[in-house]
Length: 386
Ligand SMILES: *Cc1c(COP(=O)(O)O)cnc(C)c1O
Image (cartoon, rainbow, N blue to C red; front, side):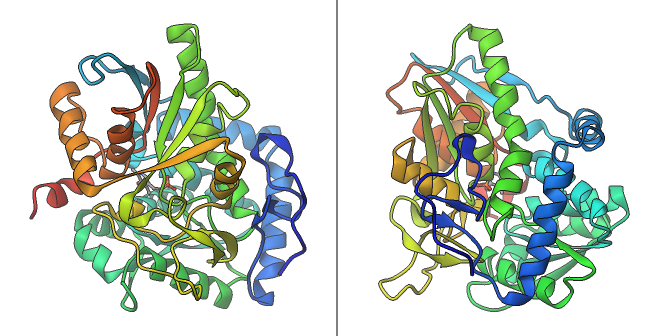
């Protein structure tokens, strides 16, 4: 475990040198993982500003991921409000997860790691990991709760086609929390050969910062596109929050624009920020769903991607400082927004960003930007009740 928190982290959302955002973040891990986290941090610091790395990442973003993704002005959705969507649903593999996976594959290659372990909930990060492992010739093992394997069968089949091994996790709630614990256990055992490709801005330092940096391309593009389209910034930027990576990536573009409201939307049954308390989960201190004894409580959401009792430490910090606000949306509200977007705009969203849409539709603002983090193909069985 690492030192005390500094009073203020540096501006721009980077963690302080010891990995804390205010009181949140850090490294709460067994000693065996500390050298691997140091190695990752050094490797990342070496290449993040390396022109060769930047060029290769930008080329992959342009030719493989499909960036920049469009900014779309909705036609019939908003009523009196003007709502723009940042279309991460049009990324290769159908969600923003690939932005992070491509970047981490480059880091793993630089570190000489030939084997990747990953956790997945809805399967989108598992698919993104399996995809980049195929592209880079890396061995890929994905841990997934057996409950989620049932809920998200098409993504399990995709991972198999991409050459990944999917290992079922059979304990606890058999969802993302347990899958993450298993992936970390595997990493501890195989740390010499293996890179842990974490799927959100959670986990021990430097992961929250690394994932945020790789997802911040969403916010950089969106800010430029918004200025080009409207000659002004949005009044509010809204994104769904599971672990928080698509939200922090979008917020990153607007963090220093004090007039722009940042609104994160959690699932009502997994509101780690709205109804959580400070504690440690999966290697970092953050805001968690837990009882008074610190026992982690089970999260519940119709959307497997939001079904996680923790959240990235930077979000807990932004909540406490008041820079961002966090709301909740129920399963029913998300389903309502899901159908509305399909019927009014011809876009079938993933259930996760449907939570963000639901809150955007009753927000007291006129010009709103919503992060559409993924597409709904994976959720058809859930929505249709099959
Ligand atoms: C995984 C996922 C999320 C939740 O993860 P974050 O790290 O909070 O972004 C949201 N939307 C989609 C489409 C996802 O696949």
